[in-house]
Length: 378
Ligand SMILES: *Cc1c(COP(=O)(O)O)cnc(C)c1O
Image (cartoon, rainbow, N blue to C red; front, side):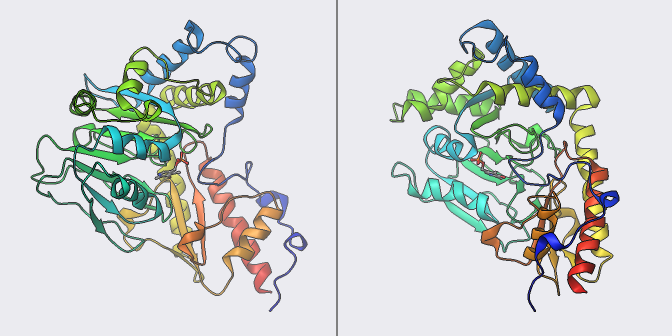
């Protein structure tokens, strides 16, 4: 059968979501965040990051995240340029002392393990793997000094509850990639030492920045590895990043518009009820999406265990209809980035359900998919 020209299927306007952006990063930015950029247009944008206006903005982000995550006393929010991928290299130099353990269950969780494996100054990492669509649970490993978890595996739509591995060495660190989870999923800081992310997902900003909430134990590790004299490039030196962050600065120049959008999203969350409120919004979207998929005989939530189905990234397998054709028609109608993670290679839709995305728009999306599938099957 020849797929119809996507533009030949027109979704009725009444069914369309208000905003058609369902991507998993960069993800939907609220119009108010763009207004915040405009408001900063002649005052903050285009000014020095070493002066009070930008330093105060960085300070507001650091204290806003401390409040949002209810970080205990002694934690610090550290930031630098490069995004989460660069943070893997930063952690390889500045957090892993000798050996790490990694829960690997998709593309993103495998990357930090690969960075450690390639580092000549570190031992071979221990990798605990499950098939995609599930996640492993880590147990204590003798001599491990870092346990690497991923709060939400964006490539598969699996979320995990963050827990310190039972009987792990009290000096070891739990280091969590929270790139797509931070700001949308709940977590308990007593179970974590480093919670790192980039702001282009739940925080609805642009990429290119990394942020890491660090426990006192993590800060101690950063200081002690640095004092040990291990060589590291200055731009990847976590100790330098920490010193700068404590002064509400970054080692080199950050993108100011990214900071403005991040802060606006953060203040929006805090004003409305913080992380619990943001998570409820995501969970509401997720409930709509998964219940809808379960009620269609041509759609199934990819993640079998309902407790592991992500509240921020939904993955839905299709049968008897080509997901790429569905995505193409949606895109032709202004509903974009519902494509599955390419390397996963499944006949699947993937839907961002970050806090900025209106739960009503997720319901509208499901109605649009119904319409498109019916049209394609005609
Ligand atoms: C998007 C994503 C990354 C990569 O983030 P960059 O900022 O592009 O480096 C890493 N981990 C997870 C879980 C992600 O979702």
